Structure formats: structure tokens, C-alpha cells
Length: 454
Ligand code: PMP
Image (tube, rainbow, N blue to C red; front, top):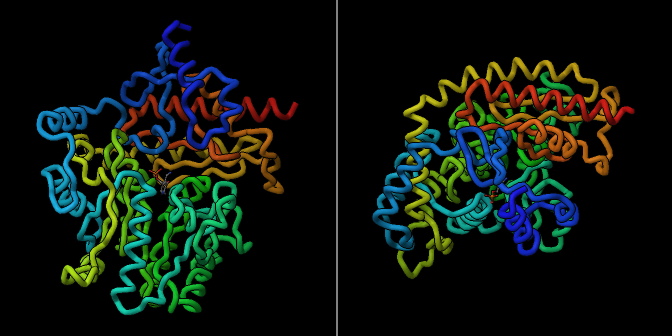
């Protein structure tokens, strides 16, 4: 290991507290120092190459060093680094807003920018809450969320989060919300089987709305894939049914496409699979192609109009982040959208999804793979101690992490979610790299689960 790598590693251990990381474990390992990139690969400070198997935590879209994004950023640097969006605009923010609306489901009209996904979720929650105040229904203050749902780590987002190990600690700080069942078919909370269940989980949500609609402002959910919950894939028709229940009960629908947006599920947005227009659509992560923090809460004319009024009526949406609409981030996002067009990304993705789904079938034959699920390029491979009973491995075995550590030896960088091995490569990944990613993951699961049998 070079002296330089050693120095960086030391500074890291001395001064950085890493997110979502047990630092006691981390301190015992040599840090992996990523300092270069090439397409679907990340390259460490010693020159080792790794396939970016989870798109740098689900943000990267086309791969690294994307010419369209690189040049959009460098061009923008020649004129303006930042100027506020509070009452002022800038060209990339305005042009990007138009491009986003053109891509969005029909009926979406206004883009409210923030930085991270969680901030954009806070915006959606506050907007929905305030909307009903202006509509003369101030008692509509509560939210419905799904078990296993995840919307970020700020307190509003945590209040509508359904992952106990992340969220239960903070319970005393949170506002009260209604919890609907997860659309987790492999471990159906209602003990039913799809399709004979007729989407009973959506009906449960519908019942909550019907019984409490006078106090419910909105439903918030991840469309098609509960990502952090374990890449849980919803059955077809669920989203549409939720939209119908929301309409029937005069409740807004917020879809959080922070993880699913920008092509990840095979279409630009997960909503597009069922032609659903939400009242608010939240975007983040892949919006800049994985380059810079930028998020957006996109809404309809109906919502926007309720906030119009005279200055002293104070109907203004009093919310804003310093870097909202940052021109460099917006330029990167424009470069990202251009790369979709130039490379025919979504069209080419169709074949890659077919290949992926074909190869994933093999995983079912592994003794400790209980469930393999995907929507487009979002894949969860759930490991179980026993296939028959579906009992999971004990957390202290860290099976997901054992698989990731094994895969790293073969040049694949993964980050699991508990016992779920996650694959979410950049959608622009070349087919040969995709094949390698799948093959290394397969072998890693096999090696680790075989070893555990001994
Ligand atoms: N919503 C979803 C669906 C997410 O997956 C995430 C992040 N994993 C967030 C919101 C929060 O985004 P950020 O980390 O950018 O705050």
C-alpha cells in the first residue's frame, strides 16, 4: 500500500464519522479509498477496479465520467457557481424545470428544488399539510405511510419511515402517522398470495383512508420498489389502486421516486408503469446522474394555485434551502437528461433488463436464496437460513456483508441491506460488465452460504 493511501486512510479514521456505518467495525478495517472512475467502474487509490454494483448508493445513472455531464458542468463553471433561487432565477434552473416537466407524468406542472432526497420529502409533507390549511380543511394534518417504507433521515421523513431499526430510536421526536401494510409478497403481512389476494394490502390502505379521511392530508409511498426496506417489489396494479383510493377519499398522493426515478425501474419514472399521476413526485439521487446533490418536489397546478394570494395573506410556502436550484447542479442534471437522449438509454436498457432477469433465474437454485426480485435494474436477492421456513439468517452473521466482502475480492463493490444482497448497477452499464457483476455476485453468495454450512 502506498504511503499516500496510508495517509488518506489515517486522516479518514482520525477525522470522518461515516453515515450509516458502525464506526467500531469500520475502524478495524483498512479504508477503501476511491479516487478515480471509468464508466461502470470505481478505481481505488492503489489502482484496483471495482464494478459500481449499487451505483454509488443508487445515484449513478450512465456510469462515471459521462461526457454530457462533464461538459455541462465545466461550461456552467465559466459563468455562475451559485445564485439564490429565493425570488431570483438562473438559466440552468429554469431550463431544467421545463425539461423535468416534459419528462414527468402528465399533469405535473411545477418544480420546487432542494438539495437531498430527504429535504425534498420534507417539502412534500409540508406542502401537503399547508395545502389543506388553505383549502379550509385544517384538520387534515396526518400522513399514511407504508411499513418498510423509507423516505430519508430528517425528522419529518423519519416520521413517515417504516424501518424500525433505523427509525424506532427517534420515536419520541416524531409526529404521529398511520401505517399501512407493506406490499412485501414474499413475507405477506396479510398471509395471502398474489394474485389471488387481489391486492388486499392496497385495500387495507384504502380502509385506513376511508375511516380517517377527515384527518389525512396525504399518502406517501415508494412506487414499485421499497428500496431501503430491502428492494421489495410491489405487485402490478398496487400503485393504481392506491391512486384510486386517494381520489375517492380526498387525500393527496406523494410518490417518492428518489430511488426509482431517472430510469432505474426501466421507465423514466416508476409511475409510468401504471400511468399514474401523483399530486407530488419527489426526485433526488439520479437527477444529476450521480454527480451533485439536487432534488425536486414536483407538483400539480392544483396544489400550486392554493398557495397564491396577497402578500399579507401569508399563503407563501415558507420553506427554502440555500442551494436550491444551484446552477452547477442543474447544469449537471441537464447533462444527465441529454445523455439519456444521446445514448437512447431507456431503449437499450430493455435488453439489459431481459438479460438480467434471465440470469437472475439461476439464483433461485442456490440453497439459501429465498427470494429474487427486481423491477428493472433494482434487484434484491434475499438470503435465508432455511428456504422452507423462510427464516432469515441471524443479524450477527452479517451474511449480506460477508457476500459483499467476498465480491470485493473479485472486483465488485456492493452494499447489502441486512440479508438482502442488492444489485443496482448504473443503467448505462455495458452488457459485459453486467454479466460480470451477476456472475461474481452468484459465486459470492454460493461461497459464503456454502462456507456457513460447514
Ligand atoms: N427517499 C428514498 C426512496 C430513498 O431511497 C432515499 C435515500 N436512500 C431518500 C428518500 C433520501 O434521500 P437522501 O439520502 O438524498 O436524503
